[in-house]
Length: 113
Length: 323
Image (cartoon, rainbow over the protein chains, first blue to last red):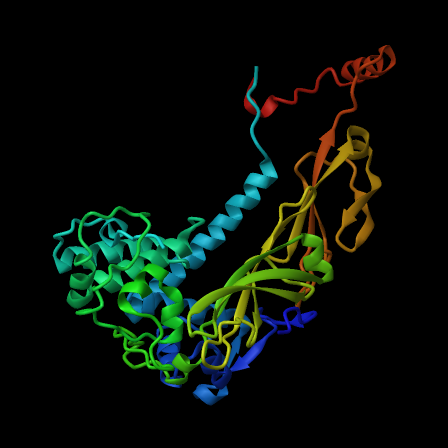
C-alpha cells in the first residue's frame, strides 16, 4: 500500500479561500437548510447576494461551521446556544493568544534584591 | 484488554438514576469537548465519557454491563466471560462509531454492523437528520502541526505521522500509522487550518473523510507573531537612541536598514510596513526599541559614564515617579 505520497497540497482555510454554499455543505456534511439556519443566527457571514446560491464563504467560515456542528451535535446545543459558544470560544482564543504574546514580550519577571 | 469502569468514568454511583447519569455526562462532555477544553488529553477523555454514556444511558446496555459483576476494577485484565453470549445482545454500529469505541466495549456489545447500518439515535442536527452520505463517508480527522515562523513565511513541506483506523481482513478495526508529506503554504498564521480533502485515511467502508491540520507556531527566539504582524525587540546603544542612527534589523525576508530617530527612548515602536507574514494584506513588522548599556568594566569605560553623569547632572530618570 502506498504510504507516503509526496508533498500533498492542502487548501489553506484563510480569508483568501472563497467557497460556495454547495461546497460548504459538502465539506461539512450538512444540508443547505442547516447552513441557512446558521447564517440566520449570525454564526456565518457570507458575502455575495441575498440568496443562498449567491453566498460566498471564506475559509475561516469553514472552521466556524464545522466547530458549530460538532458542538451542537456532541453537546446537544440549540442554535442560539451554539452561536454563543462559538463567540465565546473565539474570544477566549483571541485572549489566550494575546496573553501568550504578552508573556513572551515581557518574559519572566526578576526579583529585585 | 482492560476492564472499563463506566460508573467511575462518569463519576456516578452504580445505582445512579438516569437523570444523574445524564447530568454527569453533560457536565463532563462540556469539560472535555475537544473544541472547548485545553486539557492535553481532552480528546481521549471525551471519547471515554461518550462511551460510558453510550452504555449507561441505555437500560439494556447498562443491564448487560452490570451483569459482568461488581468485582472488577478499572484497568483489570478483562476477558469476556464464556456463556455470557447466551443472553447477550449484539448491537450494530457504523464503522465510524465502531472506530470510536474501545476493545472492551466491542467485546461486550459487538462492533461493526452491516456496512453503514448505524443504529445509534441522537444524530439529529439543527432540526433535521444529517445527510445520509455523511454516514457512508469516513469521518474527518483533525491534527495539529507545529511549524516555525520562518516556515510560515516561506512555506515548507512537513512530514506528519497519523494513526488511522482501518478494517483488517477479519473485519476488525485496527490502527495503522500513516506518514504524510504536507505542503504548508506561505502566509499561514497561527490557528488557521489546512484542509486536505480525502486524506483522513479513515474511509471505513466508503469514501475517506478529510484531514484538517491546525497550525501552531513554535516559540521563536527573536520574533513573536500576532496574526500576520511580527514583533521583535531591537537592542540599541544609548548614543544611537540619543543621536539617531541607521541600524540593521532582522526580518523574515532578510536584514533591512532602519532609521532610528534622534532622541528615541526604550519601548518606542517603529513599524516596517509589509515586513510581516505575507497574505492578501501582508502583515507589518513592529520593532520595539530597547536601550542597552555597554558594560562599565574598565577604568576607561567607567570614566566615560562618569563624564556622562557630570554632563547630565540635572537629569532625573525617575521624575515621573515623584522621587
